Length: 166
Image: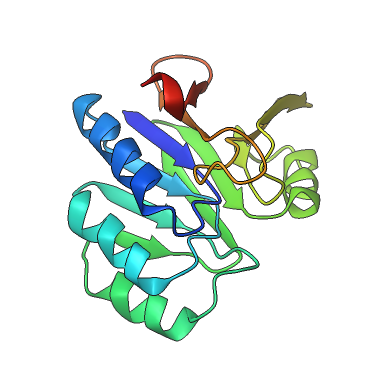
């Protein structure tokens, strides 16, 4: 399965559209969003323009959570997990959150194959025990180049993609 891992899109609709176009061409089947979508209207755009499964956790600047929940519920392929989300894909245990501290604690339990997080806008990957701890960076390109990760679960690890290079 092809999965795109994104975070910190911060209402940058231009970058979101560019990412979604790339995701469609790459036959991405699932998006994992590690928080900071920001506006509920952007959440609707994601749901409207991507037909595969979308899993999202809240970030620190996701404001109107009531409206975000209503929008997510209007799609049958959109799940908002709250602060921490757990997804099993192709026999791999995945957990997503927004903050590094929480992500590190989850990785240290050894219960998961992958822990994805965001918040600091810095792409990062490290092995914690047998768990891959990964930050895909910021899709918005805020304080850093716009990045996301693409993962074919048949491969071992997600690959970082620079938005400007697609």
